[in-house]
Length: 320
Image (cartoon, rainbow, N blue to C red; front, side):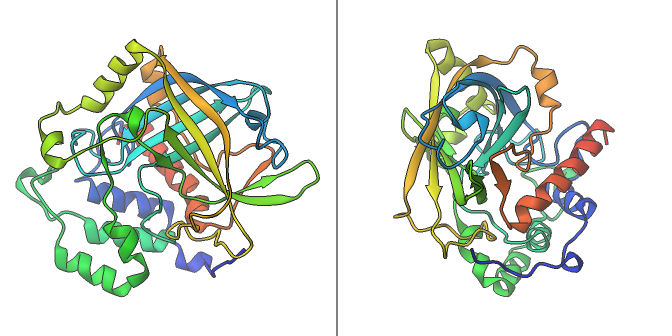
């Protein structure tokens, strides 16, 4: 597995990252996440196929069904940003394991991340920080494109990830979500296999044009998913890509070749909204919350996310 040097001195602090995210979102929004501020939570069940059982001892990837809690969101830190905005969406899944513990899997609607290190991420968020508009709210100020171009010029390897256009979904239930990071599966004999996850909607993908989305309600994705669930269950398939020896595990900006072997680990069925939306909105979903049979890869962004999420959680808990 290829690696890259990433010293502690090169890394920003969690506070610096969250400060930068706040600036990109037009300031702090009391009680809200600093990313993915507005979302909705749902319940469901995950049924493993058993195809992963030989490669990992993880409890939810054997043969027993497990309940899940799922949060869908858009990526902006401003809760007033409408669902029609051209931003990434998130699907955070908490698996409630047979042993009473839990593990999280977080996905977004683009296949690769926009930065390969925490320092690059801070640089990008600073470049994308909107210049103040009328009141400094979303939609009234825009990034300085000269600043953005200068950042891309200094980081040409990020040009593709930064320029990728996230889809504007017709429905959360018809959107694919990538976990973007590599993880390590560990089998009963201690052998390790690097993997990447992808959720695919059983109903197929469907997108809107910007013009079509502009005519929708600000919260159309949440409303549509409630309506879809009233008609029946919403299903996602969990596909897992298996790395080969030279595939990078440290860099979330680089996709593995499409011809890599893939298995179907299971399927998730959403059954309805959670009973206590307030409680689940207060929860912290964390991609580093893994379980036995799964380990973190050497991806520095993956490791750092836990610290940034903890800082964000502290700030919203303080209503700051």
